[in-house]
Image (cartoon, helix red, strand yellow):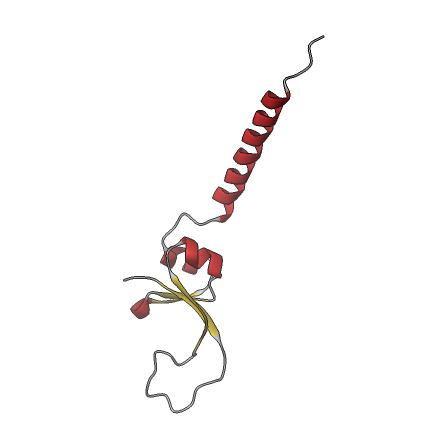
Length: 95
């Protein structure tokens, strides 16, 4: 009886692993516009500034946005007299 070729088994295992990784990646990485993704996940889409508040950095990077970990809650209200001291993570996209 002939023994299986180790190189062939290794190649087939590598291909199977690659297929599994690609399937998982396709399942979890959005194939939508930033606005669609933001709204589907019930995050806050700020239309006038093309921002999605509370988006994860990995998704922001994948969609080509610029991630800000700790933005001001009053960043779009320059005349605000009082502003809560709270970090708002958000992702900005080119308009």
